[in-house]
Length: 126
Image (tube, rainbow, N blue to C red; front, side, top):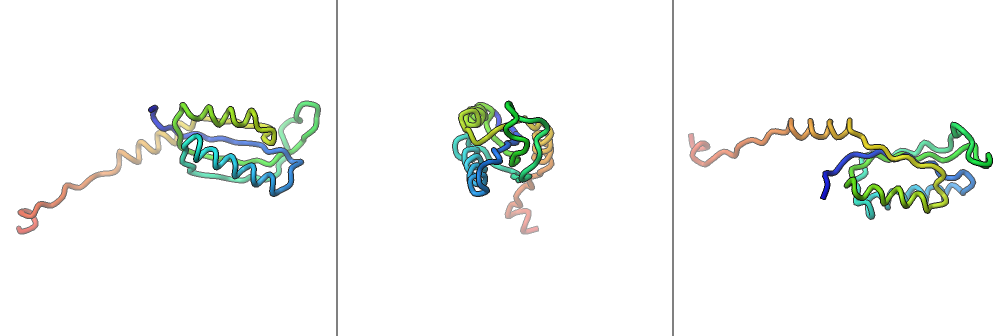
């Protein structure tokens, strides 16, 4: 098993879906990360409906519903999420990035943890 790494994934859900359908799609992605990818979600944000930087092919959509996740996962399993997005019609755009800065913070945080030696009964009696 490879070392667990931090990732950031942003998705844009189609705007022509109802609010409930868009919420269900975001929950489906969250569940996929936790169950199939076996990731541990650190942060989840919904940015809501926003204008796209550029129109989609054929100019059909000019806005989308943005969702953002930061999670820990095995690098070998992150590709499952990418494949899921490719076959899911309700997700227009997606991008996954490795967050090395969060990995460095986690390593630094772990190295700052000190373990105290247990007190033996002889030392406690003194």
